[in-house]
Length: 230
Length: 396
Image (tube, rainbow over all chains, first blue to last red; front, side):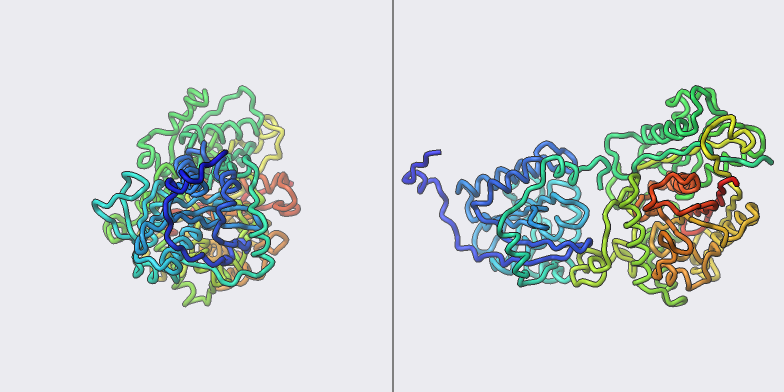
């Protein structure tokens, strides 16, 4: 697609400086090693492939989360969302989960979405925690605004973290109730909710950086809403 | 009294079954059991349906009457049986007595529950309705909470260790991963849930000292069996008839606080003794057992109170692999409640179905106990206040 860079420069939002998220590795309950790292903008097309199968899965609101995450990632790819970042969880190179968010300003972070592709090993919980870690510890923010689109998300974020309800505050994801995570809440909950070690062993990191592998559509659908569910 | 045999067994995959109603679940397993028995167009004389919570969770009552009509089994007699998480075994016991007495020749027993219709904490609250309404429930006690306190006492009294509990969790999830009917099909490792620092997040505390992987999941599911007099089994079905050699049932105080020793599961001991006496067999005769491991501690405590191990030895046996396939007494080769899942009304029936498969030698070798001839089930109601046990036998 031809791009008029003169006009593009007008349309693209100026971005804040965003320190990178240092990769870490988490040992899951099945001993598999999940590398959590910051995705590169040029990797978005592959991430969209990973998200696409969720668009028609209504179970646990995957369709809503998937559609919105798809749009957010595309917006980031095409420079239409300011200060966005994306973290990806990979096991054996395969994308098992994706989280994203953005900096509203230097103090406030906006949590967007958490998509667990491989369910049952707390992948979503680990990645959400990594997202909070990024906002508080690496972007140095004071608070993160969060909302939940699914009951699972509500249980995982609002209840497990003890988030603060924000009356009258509009989250960017729409009319759902907005909550916030403060630095105090983060550091209080960190010992029980934030996992992972650094540095990532070279072999694991090289594998993760080399390629984001995406399971086939049927496998993703089965992992998310297999006939039996989980 | 006549000897009673199980000539048909059926189960559906447990888990989260959003698309199916409770009646659908019950009908699926019933049809599988009836087909398995090979009854063709023959009707049954009576249907017993085990269910604990339809009145609360689905706002539906009289599920037995509904199921008989749904299955086209009219005008068979129909009764629903509610005995908390022991409803399944209670329903089989009622079917057993009806056939043994000579009043009925063919009885269908189905157990089912649909618990995933509500969020987790509501399901936990629903199960907690079986606690004492004046001295337990109002104070916020839940079954995981009771199990946690019980475990702490057991650790203090018998030296039970967390590693022993983990051995049960690992074994049962390993077996569940091999069971196509199991809710949880994920193999976990000791590293991932205990040894590694990340296990703090992977396996969070649920009810001290029990963690997430000490708990069974909240499940939808159903299971069913067909009973008939042993003497008529061959006329009705080509299957190897599995004989219900003995049953036992006993109760204990409603509240844990009234027990002389809260770690003493008297009703488990009494129900098991009755079952063995009626079967004229001993615990040492049992080749395979399905115990009610809603929490890992229960598999260990039940293995001791049922007479398979001395007090304080069950955990050690689990850790040494004695309760694994190929061990002295394989327990929960289905994955147990821990992995197969625990749709409360279905569980007691599912335990029996699993033992039927074992005694008919139909399972793949990864789960089949070689030459299994005698099986045992224990269905645990309340927190040990209503126990139903069966000894099942493959005919010579």
